[in-house]
Image (cartoon, rainbow, N blue to C red):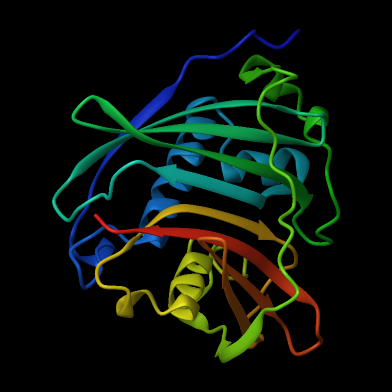
Length: 248
């Protein structure tokens, strides 16, 4: 069956509660990433493609490769936001999930995420076009926005180290995708920025962070962007990011 020109949105709502807010009563970047991810997973489950089904049928799991969001205004403690999501083909190897971020029926941001399927044990790529059930829900927009790997400046400097521990690990046994935003905001020192919020964030996930992994965080502020790279003890980069901060 051919892909639909563009599938309809799946929508769900989230209330920003205390655990999702920071010391300035604003929604943390990590919380927003978790809302986006949860919406995408719920959309897949609504189509019958639950984690359990993918494991049993294909022995595969989703892994996030890249993500990017942009906000026109901060999200505050107590806000109720709606996340609208739809998916499209990513050259047969993965899928893109597009998002609209809504508050009071007005769009305040958007996001895009590139997801890949991998074998649950070996972590080798499993082409998404082998999952026949996806053909009914993926749009095929060939000229739509793509996410490229970030290019960081050569002037990043180390600021501190972080050890990945139990509280940061998800059901796949590695650092939760949304928790990378915590590492990024800590490396920037967001608590010292006078209430600034992360108005845009682009993350390239390069290699898994497993329990016990010690990351050295490298940072540089250049051309209105904060660049962050996390490097393991084996000198292999685990992620790279670019963040823009704005005052409310």
